[in-house]
Length: 216
Image (cartoon, rainbow, N blue to C red):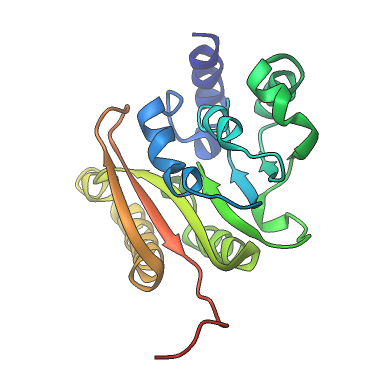
């Protein structure tokens, strides 16, 4: 309940970067981490926009001893909450030595190697199209070859918004659709439907190209 209260407080203060009125459900968290759940060798994981840690809680349970986990969170209040979790909560404490929290925009996150899994909770539908393009540029810059990006979006949100907004907002949503669809057409290998969430959501899974893969 404390997580829900804090999430709603931040939603009211910073809607454009919080983007939801409640944390993700455990069903959405499971869908977001499904590719990660099948790994069996040391990997590097990056979570972007963890918020109050609804998905983080699932990730730390999946971490294996040699894995490395970075979290990028723009909201200092959420970052402080996560720091307390890693200091106090048993599941988080077990992963604390191999986890680091960074407070910055993902497009400014300094690269120190690449990641096998990127799991993003960013509210992309709230952002200007140019920012979304820069975010995806950062994702694919940070992904290892064949690395997996998983992110969610609320079902049909852009379609529904177009019916109730003005011309400038419809233009923004249309451009956003183009950017997201370009990446989905090129890289998506799976989409999960999560109805037990508020609101219901899709989880999109994209795989980075592997330039070393044999050509067929």
